[in-house]
Structure formats: structure tokens, C-alpha cells
Image (cartoon, rainbow, N blue to C red; front, top):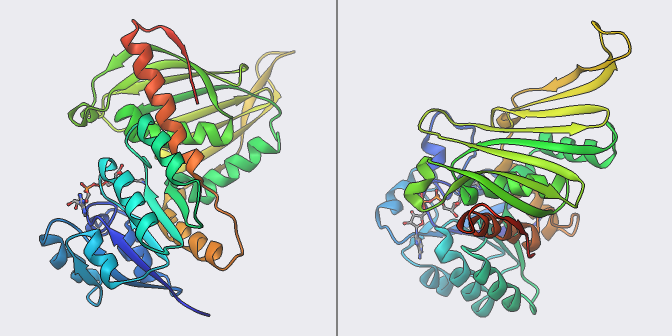
Length: 336
Ligand SMILES: NC(=O)c1ccc[n+]([C@@H]2O[C@H](COP(=O)([O-])OP(=O)(O)OC[C@H]3O[C@@H](n4cnc5c(N)ncnc54)[C@H](O)[C@@H]3O)[C@@H](O)[C@H]2O)c1
């Protein structure tokens, strides 16, 4: 079997250094995920910080280091490029790759671009060409989250009616993950209304956190509550169906499935009973799964599970939440 050549630009946390954290499952960052995949040859990596050269060579000694994407691309022609730089750099990097190379897949960190105006520019740039742009909305690669998707799609608990979310750290940061999951599982949010702004550490990155109500496709009512991560980190989602409930707990590490049965205390009423639980779902490497998926796409075996539309959608909801907050917590429609 042939090998595909890959490169990584941006050697910060998700590009490289998460794999130096002993608490994280490996691989947790792009460099090591490529290194471990037998179908990939990681040939080069770039970061504006020269110190990242030494850090790179701790786990990928044969990979050539560059201080810019342009220099890297002068020397190498690759099949896949991972963009792991801050969001403000994503659009210019995507444009440069599209204009100057024959790269087959750009695997770009979320958020795909930094605002809705950039998302519109991106749509124009992508109109021609064969390069696939795949956002890393990492929870889509997790088999536990894929089983939730199948459960909802097969209507195993009948109709999805209500969703409750608890989150910390920003409508762009954590928001891009849970808004994508809601889109994937339930459909597009049509309306939002902010109730209150909550202080979290994401405020230092100018990323606000709101408690808000939302509506999906006119019939699924939702409520998302923001918590301050200076107290504790929280990422939980409850999906309420007419005949059951799914609970996503501990950032998606645990999922509980409840089905409806006769109430054990009250005649004539029903209650929810635990049907099964799945634990340690995050011990599976989402990034390793993603890289396998990219190889399968290049082999012609799979279609992308995550598209540009999925990548930009959370930005439109985040923009609407900001509009709602700025308009004294008005009800606002999402213009996607
Ligand atoms: N999918 C996920 O779960 C996940 C997790 C963490 C971060 N992210 C996303 O990944 C991106 C990076 O986040 P991070 O936490 O790794 O940030 P970071 O600040 O740790 O790393 C960014 C790196 O990019 C480098 N860089 C900046 N501009 C550059 C340029 N023009 N050329 C080359 N290198 C450049 C910086 O020097 C730095 O090393 C963000 O978009 C973030 O939202 C996604």
C-alpha cells in the first residue's frame, strides 16, 4: 500500500504539545497522530517560534522544521496539510495552499475561520479546485458520539424533543463543539435568545459565554447554561426523547442511555430506566480515528464525515448569540 505525505503548520498544543501531557490519551496532537499512522509519512512541519523545532524533534526527529508555511511548501509537495495555527491565520493559510499547491486534503482545526465574514470569503475561494477542506470537529471522529448519532437517526427512543447543555469556556471555543454536535444530531438552530452572560476564562480570549435558549427546526426546544470554569470544567448534554433520554457526561467520556418503563412507585405513570452506559469513550484517540478517515478518503473508500458547511455553521450561531446579547437579550433568527 502506498504512503501519503503529510505536513503540519502550527506546533502549539493541538499541533504538537498535547502529547507531552502525561494525562492525555495519545495521540492527542497532529504530529504524533501522523507519526503513528503507517500509511502516512510526516515530512515537514512549521511554526513561527524557532523553539518548536526542538520540541518537534523530541517525537519526530526526521521531520524537517520550517519557520513558515511558504518556505515549507517551496521544498515539499504533500497530500495532506494540517492547519493548527490560531483561527486568525486559517483563512490566509487555506488560500495560500489552494493557490500554490496540489494538496489533496487540508485538515484544518476548528474554528475553520475566525468570523462569519471570513466564512463567506472562504465559500468563494472554494468554488473551484479539487482540494478537500475538512474541519477537525473532533467529536465527530469518536465512535461513542457516532453511536449517539445513529441512535437519534434511527429514532430508537422515538422523537427528539428537548436538549439541555451545560458548558464552560466560550461560545466559539467549547461552543464550536457542542453547537456542531447539536447540528449533527438534531438539525440547525433556527432561533436563539440569550438569558445572561457568564464570566469564564474564555473572556481573556474575547470569547463570551452565554446562558441561552434555542430552537432547532421549529420543534426541538433547547437550553444551554454556561458555567465558570474557574470553579470547575463542565461539558454535558442531555437529549430528551418521547420514549427515552441520552446523557452525555464528563466531556463525552461517558454516555448513559435511558428508556421509558412503568413507574416503580406510581401506578399509571412512566419513568426513565438506565438501559446501558458506555464509559471511557475518550480513551479512544479521536485524532487517530480522523487520520485513518483521511487515509480512507484518499484511498477512495470513504466520503468526508465533516464538511466546510459543518465547520462554519457554529460561527453563524455564535454571531447570532452576540447579536441577541447586544440587543438586550432579544430573540434572534440564525441567518445561515
Ligand atoms: N479540535 C480540538 O479539540 C482543539 C483543541 C485545541 C485547539 N484547537 C484549535 O486549534 C487551533 C490552535 O490552538 P492551540 O491551542 O494549539 O494554540 P497554540 O497557541 O497552542 O498553538 C498555535 C501555534 O501556531 C503557531 N503559529 C501562529 N501563527 C503562525 C503562522 N503564521 N505560521 C506558523 N505557525 C504559527 C504559534 O507559534 C503556536 O505554536 C485553534 O484554532 C484552536 O481552536 C482545537
